Image 1 (cartoon, rainbow, N blue to C red):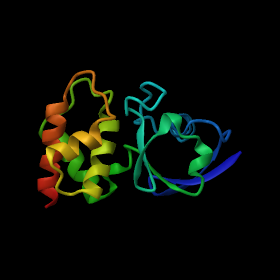
Image 2: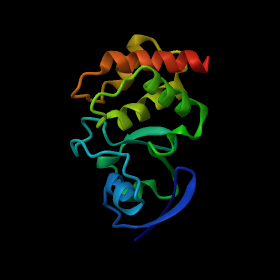
Image 3: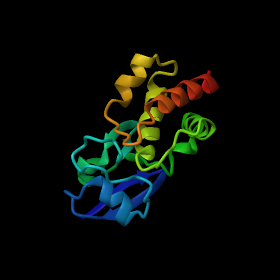
Length: 153
């Protein structure tokens, strides 16, 4: 089935079964491998992408449900000021340890800052609660989100 959508701003047609998870369509068909497989059950957040600006877990999102929509992956999140600020904060504060979950963390953080440019610790904890980090970099993640918010102010 031919599914038309925009991935990172580019019109794209994917030849995929409609029930294929968006994660595999992005990774295997669009060759954008920054989005990671974590749990396959929308519990860890490693697969987070944006669909029409909203964070979604791509491992449980059928590709057919995003036909005609805009999908942003970690490869495209830096195309705007918010994504750039989040990525810069991650680097400046050396957030990453192993790095496996970080694309999902960055995608969730960027979505948070787009909807709430001055988040409190509680706002950050709520927005990031679905993102698991086995290396426990949560304190650095929160600090980086605050840092990005300050840079955007």
